[in-house]
Image (cartoon, rainbow, N blue to C red; front, side):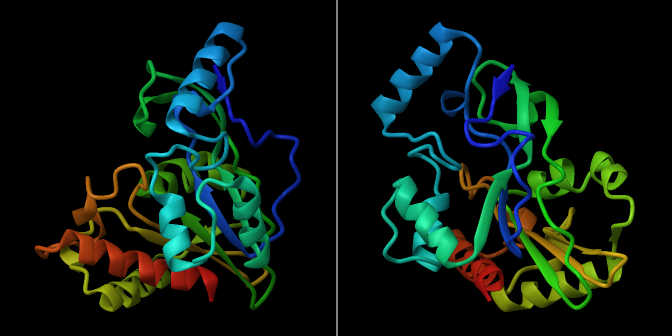
Length: 240
């Protein structure tokens, strides 16, 4: 079993109305109950310049994106700088898995098994209020967050198909995406019984952003430009 280095089930609920949500750290960033394994992980982190933080792998693109679209003065993989920026922008951050088992040292989410989910990390928005959750992959959105376990935990929350389709079409027009390529939604809108709204929008995985870019409506020749436009639109949505 591997354990998250930053969150536990006893942590307080995030009170921010903007939240960045990932899946689970890569193998070398997690904790184990085996001392020798933890020493091996520590050596890898020192060698690669990784930090035990969200998206703390030096090969992960997330904090490069955040720096480009949100915080130009961010110091890369400097935890103090990151947390200062998140606090300044009133953004919470967490992952959707507390602990799990992994197939070898795979970095793929599909190889994470026996997951203990973090499904109670947020405060329900009240009437006329909005909670924004930026999911750092479609898998986080569709398979890990808004799954059957989530809706059993939050029985008063209801998926709004029409609002989701309308909002997705609105964003697609902004970055010139092809609606016909969207097999699974890249965003979902959830209604609360108090009249609040939860908007969940996903971005391509910062570990391998070009691997499934067509799932986000990409049908042109310039994948770099499309990704740039997509991220610009989504980070703007999060911050505003």
